[in-house]
Length: 294
Image 1 (cartoon, rainbow, N blue to C red):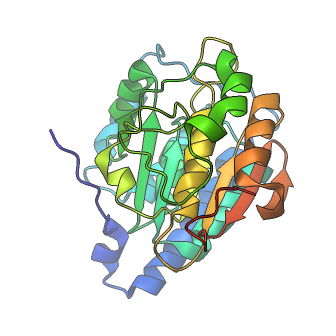
Image 2 (cartoon, rainbow, N blue to C red):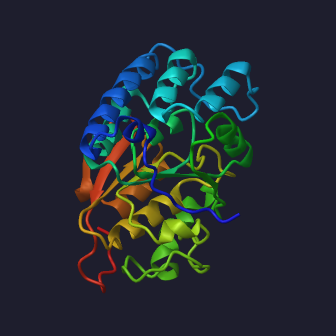
């Protein structure tokens, strides 16, 4: 079945009949409410922050999943996070950065690499916008969609391994043709850092916000985030719409993420660092023959 990237007209706007700006303000209040409700627990309980694709689908999960058919998703999100013991991958302080940008730009195009306990939250923060999640683990993808069927989560396969990080960084200028905005990601077999098999809709859209919290990158055999960081930089530099691209990268306490972020996202575009989350604001490239990222 072909996926269609959709703009979601939020149920609250349909129920209230209020103007779009009022709807966004209402959603902002709701979002901030459950943000405080469940993230405030993360500092005292981290035992359940890691996702587990083998976790059983409980009666409570079934109730939440069914509720999406009749209740606006931000309200279901509040119900879920208030009644759940799980906490997200990001801390309260880390989450506040993307939240503030989403609040200022929504509705917008929001691309998230990875999915987890916070995916429903991110989706609810972007009412009437497009939020797309790319997930590497098929078991986790099925688990997420079973619990939160309202989400748009797609399968993503990577060609890299974390063990290749240093070699790929040394060779990309020859294999990937530098940073020219004419670089093609789709179908690019010669550059392993190019995400060449993303869903078709990813290539056809300018993404206002890109959050990188996947794929996994804590063991040598795992994909690592090298290709995601490189491709996010390419997409940001090739932006066609007016404006800039906000790129957030999590787990910046790790060496590979730091090296690749400095190489491709550039220290001069870094605007904040909170906990393990770095925020970059990247403008589109001006010169088509510019072969340097930074």
